[in-house]
Length: 307
Image (cartoon, rainbow, N blue to C red; front, side, top):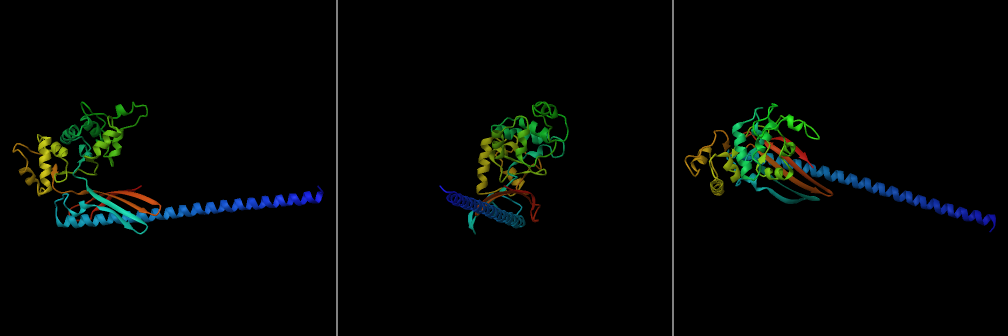
């Protein structure tokens, strides 16, 4: 083969190589542009879903405000308790619910005034026993929340225990914001926490239990001497006739000897959880927000999180 032919052959190969490299670069650029576009679209969809859910929280505030103006009694027959099933919106769906938080036991009641509360610990022990959990968790959780470093007798636990763990830490010695924080308490595990969530909550101030929304297990815990079976019958009676006052609740107790501690029960609620889910395009966003309502005023958002 002559030198000229070899040169022409090399030039053709080089040209083909350049074309191939250019094509690869073009494909890579298109892929990057496509990825950037998808990321931009996803970010836009997430932002839109987030704003939809924020709007849902404002809707919930309005519903609860109107409810508070109309009545001081809260029960499952009210509008706020009906929820919003998944509803079509532009490019997606939105749905959610408002759930009362004072039909649950507020674990921060165990020590909201910096010192452990014996009466609340005893009620919490009854609740834990009724739902099949270790009653000693009541003292362990109270010690986790109270401000001092002195362990309660029998089942209490403070820094002395936690600092001896393989990965040491100190007791919080302050109210909890979310029940998941209790996983660090001695004796608490994932299964126990999952069980507890159906009956307890964490609220920022001392709260009474709403007898119109409390479970039979919680009614049993809050009224010393009330059996679980009696509590179930009492709870069933609320479906047609919610309790209109604490005095009416007292009158409808099955036995005259049953008494409850003044200030620990109510027929209304001030704290509600709003949960929502919105899908817009590629985005699937969930929201939780704790609302606090004082009387007939517009509820405030205590905290809100998106995920």
